[in-house]
Image (tube, rainbow, N blue to C red; front, side, top):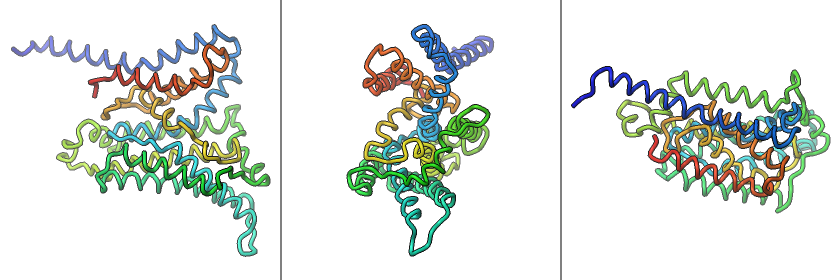
Length: 337
């Protein structure tokens, strides 16, 4: 027996209310964490600490924005940390080589830094495109493809660095440093870039046909094919977007330390995936929000910051906390699509 129209309307309203309540979960959690952090340590609520948290969030947050598209489409990428490491090493290798001169020719430092930044974005796009092609045309599971490239990227960097570190030339470090250390209107540059990337990601996901196609593919790929959506092309583009986001994050990260080692970007993939799922994106795909991902990334950074300020547990257990968060959110999401 079908429910009366009034009952159906009430049921729909209840579902919408529950969905909105679920979407507000990460924000409520972030607010509660900030209150707890302030009570535990007065230094937590200072402006300098807030700027420090947001600056450190920007790297993972930018990558997480790209990861949001991949997970909503039903994919995954386990290689983003290793990809960032190889991109960082390639940037430094190129810039140092140009600074030393090529064929007797010297290059202006500003041109060298610009070429390094361009290389990072191009490599990110190419690596993402390679992932997308292997997954769509090669019919290989995303988990397997990105698990394989995870090892490849880090091994190539180790080979480039001869097992050690690639360090940026001092003359270039001084010129490149403001990309990370400079501020605009009192806000560090990485935070501005994070905001621009997040706003662009939200606009693409919510206001374009491409964003709707990404969600449709994650909800039901077969139905999306019947609807004449170019599934393979959309998937390839999502991985390219993620690769470019990794390139942008690396561009901001290199001037921070001025070097790349085999441990650069270690566990970034865990942090990026955790940010996405904590932000409310369904692990099974089909549903997610960039705004939620941003909140999720900040929430995880706040947890790490509170642990550093209070020493409730060892800071070496940060990755363990993130792992627990992923498992807990996955448990909560079971059966949700």
